[in-house]
Length: 219
Image 1: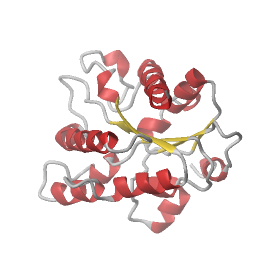
Image 2 (image 1 turned 180 degrees about the vertical axis):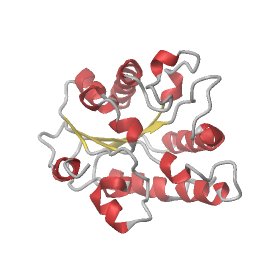
Image 3 (image 1 turned 60 degrees about the horizontal axis):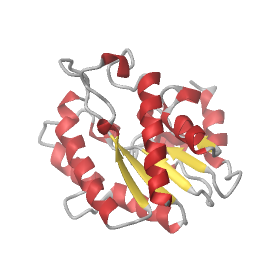
């Protein structure tokens, strides 16, 4: 694990290589599959350079300052300006363990509440203020008939997605892309062995569709 930290910090601190560069930030849904991951596929489809600063286990806002500084806080994974697009995931690890409990509502509203306030809209506003277009990748459903640590969170994820869709409608430079629109929960080939993360096939499917949605924003 220690060997990964310098690599992460170099990626997070890297400056855009061109005015068409893409930065990816977020959690393991974004980071999974390495060079064959979602942002890498999207960038290849668009013919653009990409820097992937996402990190498995990252929280949207990490409660531990040290871990946050090491890349486990999505809101702190952006270390430079000048990106054309910033694509992100986040919120799942903040909710993990509290979904379907009395603590869920407060955590969910802290991420994004019914009035579209919260850590996620604040982060997006900051990224947009830097001049970047921003795409938020909404979580897909887990596999049908299987239970994972995130199964109780599905209603909360649906709520986040619905609220992000509303944010999309009021900002032409912000894109909400629901990964669930291209992931068939009945097809287990689209899930990694843990039944949580995307398989390479799923990453290719999501990345390709995300790239097309990004093209639409630019037209």
